[in-house]
Image 1 (cartoon, helix red, strand yellow):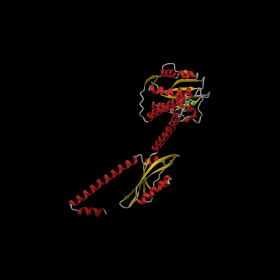
Image 2 (cartoon, helix red, strand yellow):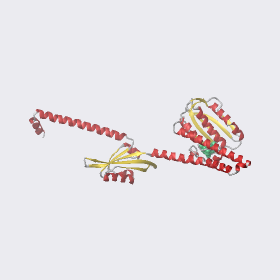
Image 3 (tube, protein in one colour):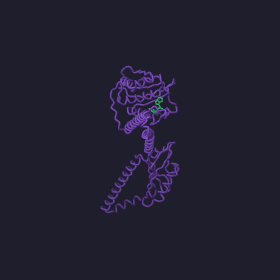
Image 4 (tube, protein in one colour):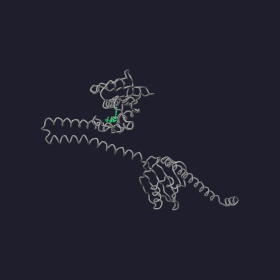
Length: 376
Ligand code: ADP
């Protein structure tokens, strides 16, 4: 073979030899270009967050990108297996089969359970034919679980808001109708109904204010302006604000933060947090009770606790009290003028400062709410 090649080359004229050399050179460049292109393509497919799977004509997997592995928590090698063996999901298997057989693209939203967690995907399949021989399907998985969860939260929020607004509005309408129907001329009941209308309107106002504030914080449009704030001063002003209500119920207010305690926080936000917690403590603590406020250092943070000797919270409800609109005893909370948003606002304001909230029942009765904020 070697001697044939050398005799063949020696018989070639000089210019023919050069031509062959040129063709070889071009081929080398072409191969290097193709190999570069392939490497770029693989780098893209391996980097995308979407899961990508390529199956051949028989429905066997020939390629899987790393995102597909992590999206479905897959371990091991699935090359050579079918989609059904890989994901155990008939809908996806059918989608791939149909794409290969009918050679048409398709798209479907599919719910799959991954490690006991429900995940939502847009599954997009595209057929491919290579030189009329090599056939198969490219399947792309877009994880839309977070989008679905956000949609659910939004729907729940709208449903809750509508429900909460409905009661005071229905009451106002009812009292106004009764007044118009004759009660207006009966001065003994007229004033009573007007007061009820006023009370419901105030409830509506505070509910709408809470909703606006919570939406502002949650949408990220809420800017905090941290500066050095003395916690003891804020607690003093809270005591002044609630003085009359504390007196009416004969509740003792113990302020354990006597000396200056400097935090780096948004003063308005800190006041709102303490105000919501003390307001709750007063609402859920009977006459002659005690409410105390204390603080202790936790690394670079300070943990502030608001403790009361009130009703306490059933253990099963403890993990849920910071949820929007969650109220342990709804009718009673409504009677006390609660919107069910106070603690959700507290949680968001504290988290915006990088802190955390906590709640526990006291062994001796009552509840202890706490939060952490950065020390100045
Ligand atoms: P509300 O406006 O109803 O007080 P919050 O979000 O402030 O709403 O509180 C949620 C629920 O947590 C309340 O309805 C109540 O059931 C419970 N709760 C909050 N603070 C206390 C407390 N100090 N003692 C007992 N229960 C409380």
